[in-house]
Image (cartoon, rainbow, N blue to C red):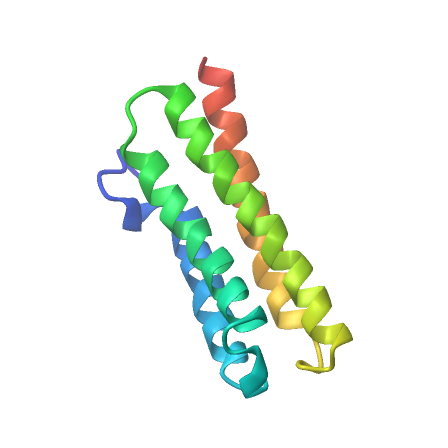
Length: 120
């Protein structure tokens, strides 16, 4: 693949976007009492991952890029915890699909960060 001109071309963004869509899909079935609790927190954390990837993509300095990609990593870890919590609360039966998608995002995000760190 040639030079990446748009954030949509980043595989890490594509996979993070898929993860966000999965989070929205599963949280639709959560109890109404969680609408302003866990559902809101899960969705915000999930959206934060691709959003920070986008913001980091447009930053010019490696240091700025890394800062936003690191924020995405933090949100990523937060989402993984919410999967565990959701399963423990019996809001979801299985986390398999979610964890598989999350692991793909984690690997790609880690690779992106490592690549930028090496270029510094």
